Amino acid sequence: MESVRRSSAVVAALLLLVCVSMVRAEDPYLFFDWNVTYGTISPLGVPQQGILINGQFPGPKINCTSNNNIVVNVFNNLDEPFLLTWNGIQQRKNSWQDGTPGTMCPIMPGTNFTYRFQVKDQIGSYYYFPTTGLHKASGAIGALQVHSRLLIPVPFDEPADEFAVLMGDWPDGIQINGKSGKVGDNDQPLVTMEAGKTYRYRVCNVGLKTSLNFRIQGHTLKLVELEGSHTVQNVYDSLDVHVGQCMSVLVTANQEPKDYYMVASSRFTRNRLLALATIRYANGKGPASTDLPAPPARDRCRHCLVYQPVPVIPLEPHGQRRQTQPSGILPLRKYQHHPHYQARQLQGPSGRQGQGVQVRHHQGRARSRSKAPGVNKRYINGTFRNFVEIILENPEKTIQTYHLDGYSFFAVGMEPGKWSPDKRKNYNLVDAVSRYSIQVYPGSWTAIMTTLDNAGMWNLRSEMWENAYLGQQLYVSVLSPARSLRDEYNLPDNTPLCGIIKDLPKPPPYSI
Image (cartoon, rainbow, N blue to C red):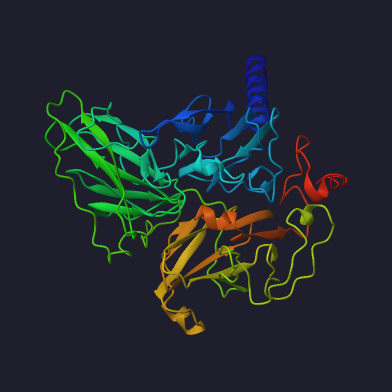
């Protein structure tokens, strides 16, 4: 009888320990210290001043797993303000860490700031870049890769290795991972593959304005992930990657063991720009062929980014999504022309003037909302958890790309001409891709839909950085009526204040 009591006591103690450990359980933390400095880089073969992170260009890679907590302490050793954003990371309940000028004050010279955010319920390929001024044209860009958790199935076999490919215009040339190779160069290979094995390439266009075509000499590309969504695994000879977009492809080393060229070339430009990087087979013999794979036809511009997702329940959902009628429509158009330059804004039909982008968090109640979101030049009010439709029209002769912070959205329609309500009958409401950026072709429109289920202040911008710099961006203010920690985190204690809110008191913290 005594032994039974002892056994029961031991079992009870073990159960108590398990419960305590479960209560205290927290997702892992990853810590980084980054020193931002000027340095010499040669992306086009000519030395120039650039912005380095820990002496690197591209900057350090962040390799993490879904739900990891990321802590990045950034020391600004430049002589000008600096700010980083994490392109595609949704910053759930935490727009304070988004790193755009409308939600964060810049890190001043000689100071530091610690970013703290969680890659909540996300997987996929992303990157970070600076949002202050035109720093994006000088460097400080790096890969951010989010892996699935170990117990979450992935719809393809684990690759032998994976490689980050950050390509972009610079601005009158093309660079791949900070270099612009040419035929016959004797540079070290960018990657090395072993015959018979399959590798994952995470490819991002981190440039300023030019769409790029990505291809590998003698090899095919199996698309498996696009901006955080697993896709139907179609095989391509080449893929267009528009500015700000990322994707993952699988490449099998099934050719003669020797060197091959990775090619990034400009799309839809009058003069074709080109950059090469070498892929080497381990123990291979022979240089890469000088016969480069041809780019796709100029008019084949819609072949690759209207991808179909994997037609199954999402592997890591962060909430139920319902396909319902949208509660408001926000048409976005370029509107203003200046005698000396073309100033670009995103605005709605009313064109009313806003009062600044930081106001939402510091002036109490947001402005009253009508059934459709109010529109002005700088910010709009969105209703928390409303399902919205956004129409992007491009009247220009060049392709445009747009990005929405804080959310993923469904690209449900894309056609030439002007949008009208009857176009909705052609929407794909069955298996549209969930993503964070979308291209709009010349003289065409694109329709996206999302649920405003992430409270905060979120940037909607052109990914063509000169357009964004000239004003083609706005902020979507999504305020939870509950004003609770359930929906939005408090303003961090280390947040600096600037501009019109510099001398204002910080908002009272939520307690529940």
